[in-house]
Each structure stands twice: as C-alpha cells, then as structure tokens.
Length: 467
Ligand SMILES: Cc1cc2nc3c(=O)[nH]c(=O)nc-3n(C[C@H](O)[C@H](O)[C@H](O)COP(=O)(O)OP(=O)(O)OC[C@H]3O[C@@H](n4cnc5c(N)ncnc54)[C@H](O)[C@@H]3O)c2cc1C
Image (cartoon, rainbow, N blue to C red):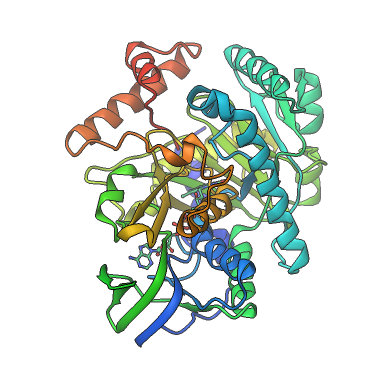
C-alpha cells in the first residue's frame, strides 16, 4: 500500500493518547508545599504508585498516605498502554517457566488472584473504566507460529490452565481476518480496560479512603532522617516512615535501581469509531484482545465506542536511554501500523486515524518486575514489568508493602522477588547490544522463527530484549 494513503489516514491524528483525550480527565491536584510527616509516601502516580497507596489504606485505614507525582497522574505508561490487563506476572507463561519453573504454578495462581482482585476493586468501588473480562486471542500468522501456539497450549494444560487451540476457520469465526492461520484463546486470564479511567478511579478511591495526592511534585532526592526518610521536592520536604518508589522507567531517586530498566518505545494508533458495517465485518463478538505471535508482535482491541486500537511491532531503543517526549511520535512507525492494520483487516482501508502516540516501556533483562529495599528497609522499589504491567503493577505494589512490613509470606518468598535480574550494561555496550538483538529478532521472524546464534546465546544466559 502506498505510503500516501497511510499519510492521509494519519494526517489529522492527535498526539494525545486516546485514553487521556477524555472530558472526564480530572483537573490536576495541587502541588505539594511545606514540611510534613507521614506514615507512607509513594513516589509516582501511575498504576504501581496508586495501587500501593490504595492497598496501604485498605490494610490500615488510619495510615497517613501521600502520593507525589512529578507530572500528571497516569500521563506516562499508565495512560499510554493497550489496556490489556493480564493475570500474568511474568510477561507470559513461557518466560516465567524458563526462569522460575518450580514456582510457575504458584506465580500463575497469584497472578489469577491479582486479576480477580483488580476486578473486585473496580466493581466494589464503582470505577467506570470499561473493564471487560473478555480474554485474549493469540493468533498465528505464519506456520511456525502455529507450532509455538501448540507448545503454549501444552504448557498451559500442564499447569492446569484452560485455553482453546483453534483452527484457522475457528479463529476467523471469532475475529474475521484473512491473515489468521490458527489461534489460542484464553477466555479468563486477560481483561480489557480503559487504563486512564482506571488510574483516575484509583486516585478517587485513595482520596475517599483518606489519602492525599499531589501532582507536579517531583521528588528530587531521598535523605536519611533518623527514623524517617526525607523526600526532597522543589517546594518542601516530606518525612516518611516508609516509602514506595513507583517511578518505573524514569531515573529512580534510588540510584542503584536505575540500571535495571531501559526505555523501549512502543507505538499505537486508534481509529475513529467504526461504522456499523465495518464493525460487523470484523465479527469479534467476544471482544477479546488479540495478539499475534511473532517475536515482533502486534496487539489490538476494540474500545467501548468501537474504535480499533492497534499497536506494537517496532520496539525502539535510543542511545543514552532517551526519554524525551519527542520520541512519542514516529511517522514511519505510525504509517507501518496503519499498513499492518489494513493488511489484517482489509475492510478498514481508508478508515481515519484519530489518535497516535508512543510510550516508554520499562524493559528489564528478564522481562518482568524486580524489587529492591534501601534505607534500612524503609524504602521499597519495584520496576521492570516490560510491557505487561497493567495487571502486574498491583502485585508489584503489594509486594513493596510486604517488604516494608517485613512480611514472610508466599509472595516475599518467591525467587522472583528475592533475586534481582542482570542489570543493563552501560553505554555504548547497551545500545550496541540492543541493536544487534533487535536485528536478530527481525531476522528470526523472517526465517520461520529460527533463532540465530546471538539469540540462542542470550536465551542460554537468560537475557533478552522485548517490549
Ligand atoms: C506503549 C505502551 C503499551 C503498553 N501496553 C500494555 C498492555 O497492553 N498491557 C500491559 O499489561 N502493560 C502494557 N504496558 C505497560 C504498562 O503500561 C506499565 O507496565 C504500567 O503502566 C506501569 O505503571 P507504573 O505506575 O509502574 O509506571 P508509570 O505509569 O510510568 O508511572 C510512573 C510515574 O512516576 C512518576 N515519576 C517518575 N519519577 C518521579 C519522581 N522523581 N518524582 C515524582 N514522580 C515521579 C512519573 O511521572 C510517572 O507518572 C504498555 C506500556 C507502554 C508504554
């Protein structure tokens, strides 16, 4: 398809993430000023920070809790993602099994309970975030991907989990794309959500429970202050008994946490609401999220007003862990997403793209979260969900509270929690290694999924690069 057509479709697209372009976006909360003592300070107002504050207040309603957000609530990954809220804590069962085989059944159980608890919070607190427990359909676009889906099906069955292996016809009957050769349907393990509305609803719940939230309040550094930790901001200091650091891909106030994540930019496009005939042509009655099964993969879903949100494939790392907001737009990638979307659903040719945006994913060498404690156990940090943190962030926050309380339980005993991943090397090795890996991944996809020497070596070392 000529680039001209993709350019025309994208011509008037807004750079504001679809989820944040919402008249229900709350006014910013006031910035923090002054010097106050609190029981718990949470740094970062994305999912991790918001869940940490809410869970802390649910555990102990008398606790004084404050959230300090450097910019706006949910403006970063939390308001930019695809809204796939998965039960997986390990960036998929394959990754988890390769790293923690003995713990995998427990990790899956904890992950399922975590997703159930998110759903319960949404229902009990009446959070209007289009939460739909529709599941996820993984589709094969190449014969080698069918083999991978069969393997995944066996693995899930061995772990006692239900998933349905589907033929091409069965898959196309669910979602009508001529590109599908087969699929694997997980009906229970994933929900679709409007992530910004979930974040705003969690913020309201925190305030209803007596917590305080300040936006435009960056924590510049941490200092020991006797029995407390001082969080220094531009307009005052918070002295907290305990601190949760939920700063994700941004430079952590805890310097030694920084080497555990690199920002990998991922992009999405959203269509205008589909017409009745466009919508009917897609089938898609079950409204599950869809992911394809290449190493470079797309993920896509319908919104409550029947737009198609389509993202993924390019996973871009810029030298020096560049986080500047100019990276959130990339015309080549946006046009490529449009072309891939039309290839997947030819009936959508000519549909207008209303929003396009990118976001930085906190990528860890083990593709899943890791935790750290500092300041004699008064500070806990979690980061590194690697593109699957919408659901796992609640678990990440819960473990931070466990660690701060010194709890010995099935969460804190997990090897995943006790052991840290390999840190990323410094530049220029970091950039070089990631570029070689990206190229090798593209080559593997073009060669029937066959992983070359470089990828096989990384696999053996338990290292990798993903989004
Ligand atoms: C494009 C994209 C698509 C994705 N798709 C999915 C998906 O479909 N499903 C899924 O499960 N996951 C997905 N993810 C990942 C998921 O969005 C994240 O894992 C999750 O939102 C992480 O939440 P968080 O609170 O840890 O981080 P963030 O949302 O990044 O929040 C961190 C916050 O900390 C603040 N902060 C940083 N430093 C300071 C400081 N010093 N002082 C005060 N505040 C500070 C930042 O301003 C920011 O608001 C995607 C991510 C991206 C970028």
